Image (cartoon, rainbow, N blue to C red; front, side):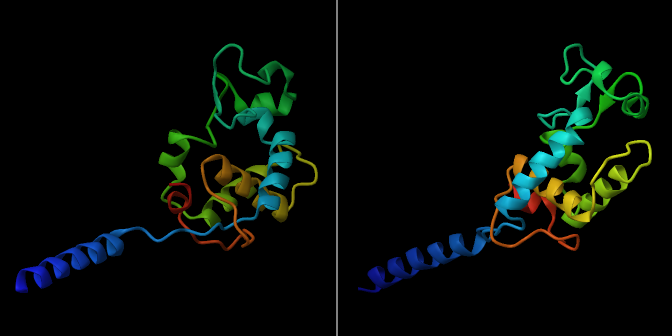
Length: 160
């Protein structure tokens, strides 16, 4: 009888240990509507340089849209050899994964505010929506909570 009690306690204890070691499920920090609005804005602004796949430019032939199709200001900002950092994938997460979403939003805001770009209709809400889209492309899930400029979650905690 004592053996059965000890066995039961061991099984129960190991189950609690496994449950205690699991990461809590992260709820979404943006809405699906924000990500969709961000996708549309991204395609009309950032996508022309970072590409529509968000994988950036490596200066390779055949990248779309072609650098030659971009405005003179965009081409000057990109420079030669036409490299633009990715906004998705391993390289992006290596650079931004340990930073907060608020830091990422701030960086996007600095970029879109650059007078060389002359983006039209880019305000704080648009920058936040673009960030939601970038997070979604990197694997983050939408939820019911809207993304804000003060969201302090770590990027990697949302995408893994």
